[in-house]
Length: 487
Image 1 (tube, helix red, strand yellow):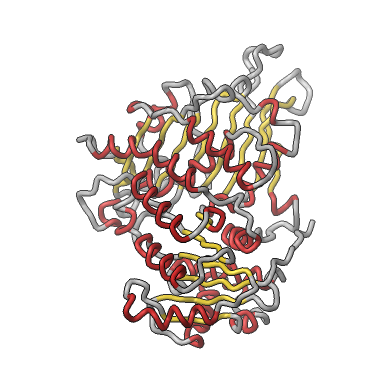
Image 2 (cartoon, rainbow, N blue to C red):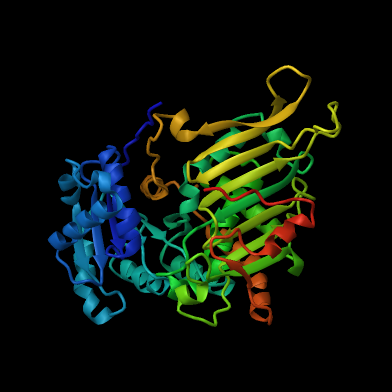
């Protein structure tokens, strides 16, 4: 089944931080893939801006190199030159208002009237305010512009509120797109379709039938190369407060009245506000140590005495009718055994088995795989083939998106491709609203503050393992166990 490509309207997109890692690795290659797919209109233009002194030709050469590095198969694509011809560049140091005026004027001159205008803040958070102020001062903050803001959106609740208030001085909430690339993944959106476009699961999607939910985001890489950022953030701020909370919301939310941006985000906000405080015994934080020839966290982060967590496992409960009594177990970490992002909805076992007690039915599980090999499978009990009586075996009904919706090995659009096109369409469904961000921080702050005031260091775990032993104990005491990490 070929995917349909729906072109967007003509647009001008300015990318602040255009020479940075995110732009070169994700944004610009993603835009090129949308160009090749025929989704960008003929007049669409992309203006890069950064502090680097560079000409437009130099910027085009840099993006050509970035596409070769991060999207090798398309490095020799016949449409690459045409795509590069759509790029422009303006050198801008937004922190130096004295020298920035000509650059801002050049940006204003290049941004056309009468087309959709968007500005992507692919920069450190301290640059959000001077960029927002510059756009407003030069007449680019009106109704025609949309602002894309990258994480981290705040360091805690107070800083998130400050950022929201600052942006609100220059832009309406309907203009602000707080991006979380996890929400752009095909499987996350398909979770909405599975729940709300089929009658099969929704009647069972509650505490009466769901025993527990596991959400895992495991990475094999360490923090080398990101140490200065990560050591000031940790897994709780880097992953749990944003990505994992958004996945939790998608699983736990009530059906919205319509697939509409504010209707969906209203229901997600209700989940965040229903989060119960996490008890001290329901959370484990850890830090990887050297093993199997791999460096430990201290060496990777350049801080041998760091107490920053690279692993978090916790038990989350919701105070509402749908989920009362059903726990959600979350875990994420660096330098783990496998790279995998998945959600497992584990249903309760049948209340009575008619089969031999030596061969009881096992719980059904709905597995949602975000990476690698995006897809879903449902584990069900069937009779094992062959004579000799009724022997039960659990098998998966497997659906790989690449196999089900196209040729095996077909490439699914990257999350950034989809989300940038949603910005151009003006669709905020997959972007966080300001009150969502603040509600997530309000829940996470007490956990982070408890660790900061404690003398207990993070629990050590071997690089390349499944995490600290205490994480397994967190599940074991409830009579459950984590799913095995498999990449």
